[in-house]
Every structure is written in structure tokens, then in C-alpha cells.
Image (cartoon, rainbow, N blue to C red; front, side, top):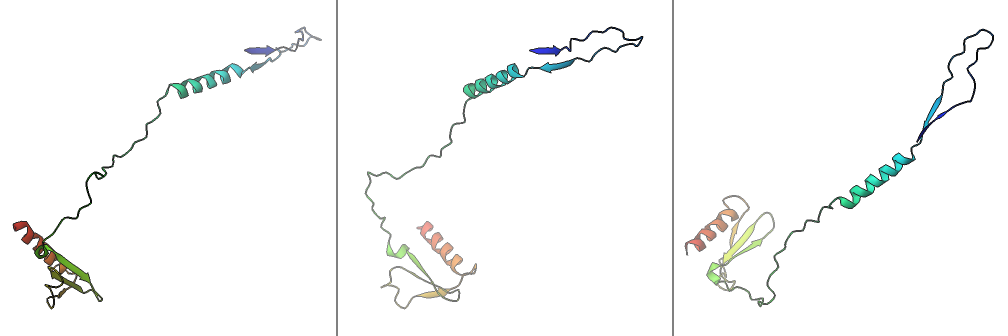
Length: 126
């Protein structure tokens, strides 16, 4: 694992001088630590649970039913036509019944909003 390199020199005194202890270099072998790292990575990758994909449920229409339109009484319908210069034309019932009864309003709160709210209240009361 770890080894200490030795120069093989002797520590004899030469000419009355004191010799200092030779510095020894250390070398650490990193191979076992790299192996341990890869083993840990592999272990955690294999034992972890992956997040499951989250899906949203869609409620699809039943295909066994026929595509029938709901019948609406002509008196309950409100037809809105958008015109130029912020004008809104509307009539109730069918076009044949509304000949000459096409009314004009605008987009203000007392305009088309009030008309739609009044028609909703009228239908709710019935």
C-alpha cells in the first residue's frame, strides 16, 4: 500500500561533521482507493430506486355513445356577431325569427357582458 523509499546510504560521521537524518519520501498507492470508489458507485447505482415517471390521467369520452348534439330551444339561444369598430350585434332565437330585431351593443360592462349575464339568469330561472 504505502512504501517508504530509502536511498540505502549510511549515517556515518564524515570528518567530524554531524550528518543529518536523510529525508525519506513516502509514496501512497491510490489503486485500492480508486477500486473502492468504483465499487461504491456501482453499489449505489444498483441499489437506488429510480423516480417513476409521473403521468396525468386523461378522461376520454366514451366511444360507445353516439355523437348526438343536444337540442336547444330557439328561445334559449343567443347569437353574438362581432363587427367592426368594436360593435357587437346580437339576437335571440333563430335568424328567421330575428329579422329586423338584430340589436347592437359594445364590449363595455353594460354592453355584451350585461346581456349575456341577463340571458343566463333568465335561463336559470326557467
